[in-house]
Amino acid sequence: MTDAKLCWLDIRDAGSATAAILEEAVHQRIDGVVAADPAAFTGLPPTVRKILLYPDGNVPDDIGTADLVVVPGGKDARAPLAEAHPDVEFGRYVEIVDADTLEDACLAARLEAWSVLDFRDPTKIPLEIVIAAATGAPGSIITTAANQEEAEIVYGVLELGSDGVLMPGRTVGDATALRTAASSRTGEIPLVELTVTAATHIGMGERACVDTTTHFRKDEGILVGSHSKGMVLCVSETHPLPYMPTRPFRVNAGALHSYTVAQNGRTHYLSELHAGSSVLAVDVKGRTRPVSVGRVKIETRPLISIDAVAPNGQSVNLILQDDWHVRVLGPGASVLNSTELKPGDTILGHLPTADRHVGYPINEFCLEK
Image 1 (cartoon, rainbow, N blue to C red):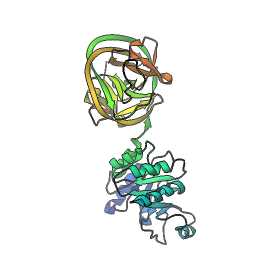
Image 2 (image 1 turned 90 degrees about the horizontal axis):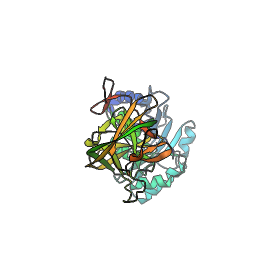
Image 3 (image 1 turned 120 degrees about the vertical axis):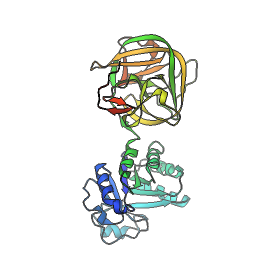
Image 4 (image 1 turned 30 degrees about the vertical axis):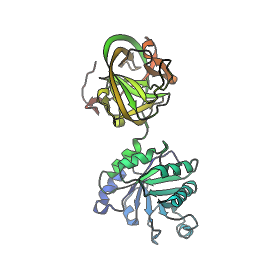
């Protein structure tokens, strides 16, 4: 398996919309276009892999400019095709319907350069088995998905995910949806070191604990801040505490007015989050992943206001529960108790560059203080 997340768009049923769909696919930098007719590849740039898929194994004599032909059966079965087309790659198509075809899929994933897997049933357990079986194999697994929602799941199965997704492109917008599904799994955002300038006890208020449906790592949390252009990396309750068990799914995040970051750069107030919302988990190297919210607990607690400054002079503020077990992250994944922060301490944060309107980045004047 590989680290790349590939996007293959299937235009076999695109009909009269084919030209517009292909134009969008090129614009979205789709990795591969899948067709049954090699004429569909006319005009595609060399950056797009041209793939012919024949689940029934009936390959025409003329395969045009195809880069890759995918058919059922192993290398021995397609040897005559490979001999007739020595400049073309070949991959194996497997429809998984039972235990025997699942074993075929595992074999293909271990031995083939390209495996296109079509799972008949909605369960993702067979895909988990194939991904596990293919660990360390050099080839790529491409899994079919019916839509963007399923594509997002396929990309994330066993945290490794399928190397790529083959999704139907039947209308304009499908290529964008597929690219969005591929890019929503992981990404990076720049973190900066902030210098604490003040820590002030400000009395009672409402703070929010964000309980997610995932297990945070020890160097991971969510970004929270009073202002949309400056946030602090708040760590989860993964680290041991003397008076209570760890809750590795929880971030004691801050006062309910605070911003946090979700996918695609959108911000949300902590007060807006609810079961089913999505937030962005961020580690100390800036690597991100979306996580789902299972619950938000908003309760009245004493609060502490932390002021800090970025290297560019920008001010950042975070208001947290005033209790030493509430923590933020510093350089090197150091865990810092909020009530022990003092001027001169260094914490990690993020400086979004755009102002916000209903959580979306927008280029307009906005003063926050």
